[in-house]
Length: 200
Image (tube, rainbow, N blue to C red):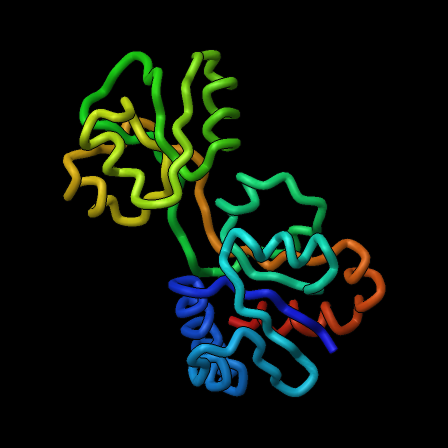
């Protein structure tokens, strides 16, 4: 039995679409039929449906052998796990955004506190970070912060809130990750899943 932690929400929909595109319809059909279930069994695979930022936790702790999550989550969290492969969905990027270009951004609102701190350490600028869980755009719109650090796909949400990208940063996509111990103890089973997901 292999256990795979999946991120609920938009990334799950993207994963299901990818499964359809590679004709892995048994998996996609089972995942499409989910309403409120958090555990889905398909033959010898158990899927756990969890919040995106929790996927690496389940994998690192050994509750899940594998996980699929965005690289934004991996950038933010410093987890001990294997980053096995890129998956062709979930594309977006980190961006520093504000109303107007500035030489410095003393106050930045974000969900990505550690990533933001590392960025400002790299450019050697002091910053006060306001950690938010919800829509961070509001913080810059109402001048609670000089800028926001967030993930951007099309930029529509930024534009609708009067903001624009000032600095484009790391590219993001979905990743297949594994527990370090499970990668050796269940190597053959994990390789089968990697090979299935690599099909174009």
